[in-house]
Amino acid sequence: MQQHDIHEEKILVLDFGSQYTQLIARRVREQKVYCEIHPFNLELEKIRQFAPRGIILSGGPSSTYGSLAPHVDAGVFSLNIPILGICYGMQEIAEQLGGEVGYSEQREFGMASLNSLSDDPLWAGLNFPERVWMSHGDKVLKLPDGFAAIGATENAAIAAFASPGKKVWGLQFHPEVVHTEHGYKVLKNFVDTICGCGGLWTMHSFIETTIANIRAQVGSGKVILGLSGGVDSSVAALLLHKALGSQLTCIFVNNGVLRHDEAEQVQEMYGRHFQMNLRYVDASRSFLDLLAGVTDPEKKRKIIGNEFIRVFEDEAHKIEDVDFLAQGTLYPDVIESVSFKGPSAVIKSHHNVGGLPEHMKLELVEPLRELFKDEVREVGRELGLPSEVVDRQPFPGPGLAIRVLGEVTENRLKILRQADAVLLEEIRAAGLYNEIWQSFAVLIPVKTVGVMGDERTYEKVIALRAVNSRDGMTADWVRLPYDLLGRIANRIINEVRGVNRVVYDISSKPPGTIEWE
Image 1 (tube, rainbow, N blue to C red):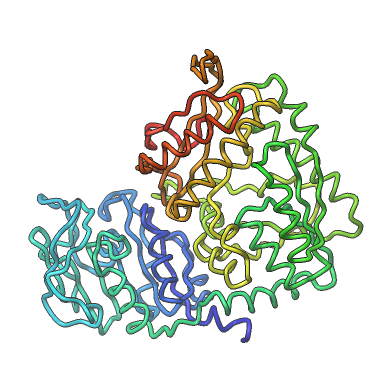
Image 2: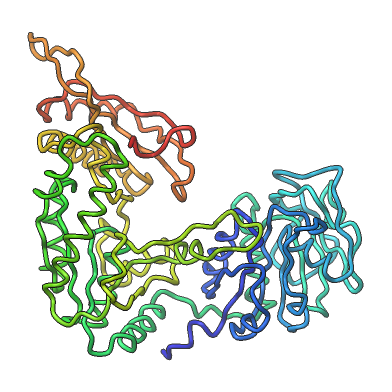
């Protein structure tokens, strides 16, 4: 397949600051159509260069009639490209094309019942009334010339409008959220039927194209990659290995705060199974020496981050003629690195994975920078990565150092590793591992009285944590079965010397955080 094929069909999402914007892009990509998010004020010439098959205007927190309201370049409506406006995007269309938007006395937040007012290609395959998700305080009061209302709810006489002649549609509801029962059909109708996309964006074609791109970028040069064993760095490593073979060197640093047998598993899989050029650096002693006596979580993080950079840099300098540094940067990182002028609260600089120093003067190779996390997992499966890597739960960069509360010592790490291994073993045996976003053990730096046999004990406490989340921003604790919790607690107390009590954390985020430190 030629390199340009998978990007031949593209949808452009212009972001007005909605919390759901990334969801729009993900829903489009689920239709196997490539999609990118850009700020609402993207220059018209850049939109032409991008050459999208269709444009989606996102929702946003502003009012279109406000003095500081964000507006898309009016020339967008003269490009003769299909446009779909969602919530604020719909109101933006009305405002720009001569309609009227105003404050709604009956605001809608939550579920609503949508009725069709006329047949439209956007409604193909739907059965009205449809349950949709509303989130708006403004509404379209008057339609622009050439537009007709195609949908209404109890509180919105114009809940959807269309001007097929102008190739413009607007929705007051959010088709991208799961609460809108058949929202995916609405987006599919726009992307497939109205924009004429056929679904070229598959992970199989992505792999072929990306391998060709890597070879074109790197040529005969050498690439280094910091391999952690996590999903992103593992998939990036395998893609690069397929493209470059021995030109790639992966550096795996044992920082002393890994889980049970993790260092051995990474060496076995990537070095021996996939036969990658893997350099294993056991720097656990230097990390633990630096962590001695440190109890502040932020200090722990800084120590581990800085020492990783030092060790990685030392090892990288031992490899001659390196030209490229590979990273597992994902598309959400790319989106967040863009400073959106106006409504979006997403203004955050993306930093290199591991914060590697600029003075290394290496050109970046980022094979995953177009992908969302679920797409990365799909690529991993296509490349033959086993489920235990592809479906691995998130693991923090500072590792067990922030799960040993207080000072990190070898003995405390040993206790936590054993307890954590028991927890994960039992959750896997119960068939729940892939249903839980994150599950782990925490060592609490207090001792409690217990009885073992006929003797009084005074030993440590292990807290168990299991949460479900979509993105880590919010999380709810998992209602693990009592018999499973009982089995885990029983095994930890019996098998892990130094523990006589196990507790279960039932805090959600907010107000708590996922990690304890």
